[in-house]
Picture (cartoon, rainbow, N blue to C red):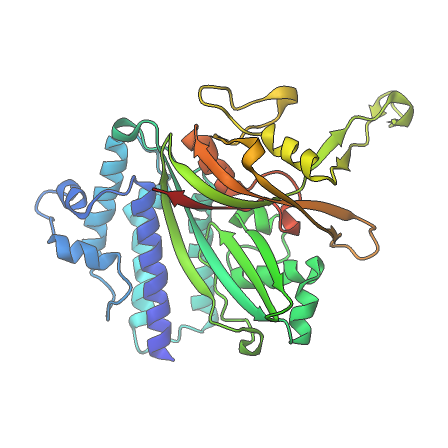
Length: 384
């Protein structure tokens, strides 16, 4: 148990250090060494081990301090803004102390005090995850960086509970179980704060429920009962530099709907002379309508991020006629008895990046509405 706790703590520490490197502009190990303080320039191989997860002991604090200072200096040189909790050596000193506590054999990592300190530290990291992924300027003026954790879950549909997970109300709670401790579990904004997006695929022939989960913080799926799983959760940190002109294959599920502007006769009075307008969204239930919904959000090269009727564009362009569109079954509302039915459509095809910063933001936060219902996640694969 002690060895497992140490490995988990070291894995978490290394992941946070890799994220700092990523948000600093992904400098090479040689660049990191170059920016270390004078008289504190460790070997390149030594620096590389800090970003790995196969260490047997906690790294020395003086080494961590030198690398953090170097990453902050590189970010400043590249005109990338980092928050104090990311680049301040004092914040990293606290993280390092937590790691050393776990490696102390006499310390009970399951104690209430230790859990509290880890949760406090997690809350500090969360502040950095709510920031917009920075755009690297200078040498990569047209590029932008996208980073997130992806989890592939394969569940056994023969299990009664997995069949229940297909209902959105249960699925929502199931996904939140992988992010305990990052924020208040019952917080209504937990999904948006942690950047949680998901998509599901049901294979009735193979009795498999596949869930792809994207998040801005590393998940912990250890709470899942092993009897539900067909394979161990596959978690990976995705780091992708987006450049103008890059081409990708993509798949996404959208909620094709439009805002309905009510007439004056359907508005209600607030009692003080003002009129309260009740907004409503109208579903689009046919493939051509869904195709047009997506086309309106495409952003040809050189055009503004805002399109007709104030629609936010997504930083990519594509040939709308080549897109494959499939209308999916509607999802029931999370609240039982609400009567809500959410329309969904799957869109596949090829796209070209025209505005890397905008596209990175869309990849991070999702596209359109109904993200709680499996809409909005965009999965991409680079076409070389």
